[in-house]
Length: 221
Image 1 (cartoon, rainbow, N blue to C red):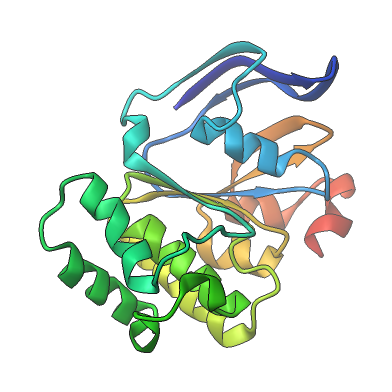
Image 2: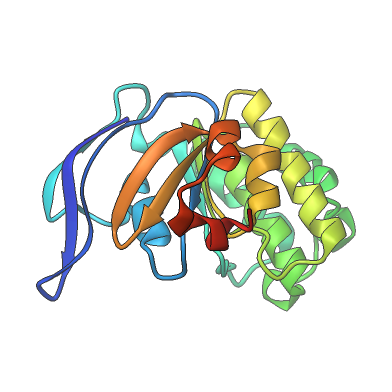
């Protein structure tokens, strides 16, 4: 993926960029930075949910239909958990949607909830379903916006394990997170976002070994 002079403006004010970045087709990149720095905006821009005001963003190793996005606050369809999992497969004409939905539910501990209304789930259950729904199509790239924020420790560990296995299987991950520990566990490199500008990508070990002074309070080192 290549960003050339990409900038976003809202109401005449600059919110991101201009950025020049080249991102590899494999691995896990964590987006880190203070609140309001532009992490979510960058994540949405990379996925195509935000169109650049200027500049170009191009994918040279995948198509947009091969991507998925997990929002911090997921929106569920007014259907069962099973139907939420089956629908992305049905829309793509994938055979055996029911069996694949059941297998994915089992991976995330959702089997007992398959016939429950998706909008009646708890916060942790909803986030597990959002991740399952995103991964069920085996996306080439997965964008994650604070996917474990406000979840209990067992659910965080479960989801992190799912993310790690997806990365090992070849899914390109972009993870916005406020957690230094999570970035250390999952990320190969870091994009530091502050005031709408981006530094990196920097290998994770190098980033945490000697972060600039302005970053230390934010990353807890």
